[in-house]
Length: 272
Image 1 (spheres, rainbow, N blue to C red):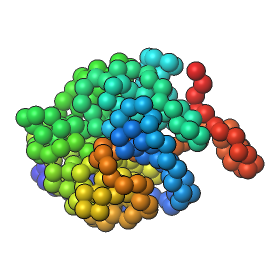
Image 2 (spheres, rainbow, N blue to C red):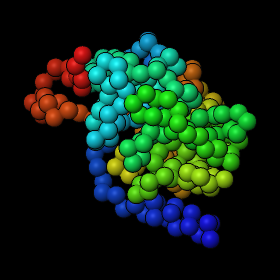
Image 3 (cartoon, rainbow, N blue to C red):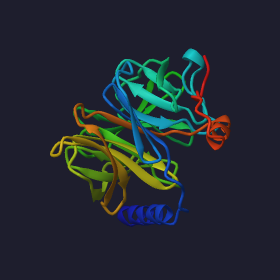
Image 4 (cartoon, rainbow, N blue to C red):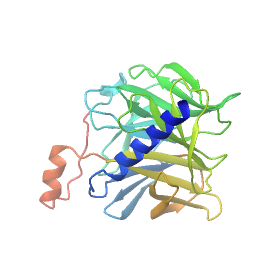
């Protein structure tokens, strides 16, 4: 019975992704170690020495506020998890700046919101790949679910239309898995490129992925389908760290006006 439920869930999610209306290619922020990259209109901009090693990023959804320091983060802000803290990424269309909004609450390699709750995936001994939940205000860990896969951390996204299901990828087996909270085991979905680390983010029903590739020694960006096809969009840099995060840049309303008018001003999402 469970197998058939998972099969239907995957089929519905795949249909939702496949049937999503085409959207313009999003602007994306990617990290590798202490370097940030902006992918915008097919061009890549590089910003070294941002101040912390970032292991994962995502957007804060509408109606959700996170963190308590320096104004926290809210609708559309990029949330970044670093080695030494949790941050809001300010000025994404200029020179990005990490503004600390809280203290790290445990392992989390790829933050993702679902139903206003903040989750992530991590490599936790003795379990291996583990889904964790953080309090979105304090970032204290409040839940932990072993996935049944002895793998490492990687990227994770929510399954569209579900309250508690995820796709996650990890680098030991180079696989994308489906996991529902409380299940004993994960369900394999497809293989992925051979990688040492991956960041995932879903935008408009499309899964974007940043892979650290050990064979070519490249950090690459592309789209990852549920049938195993990875379509590369750009080579971002030489792979030199492995840890990578990925999030969409959501312009403020004022940013649209500036872009439409051809202005060269730098736009900052948040102030002080």
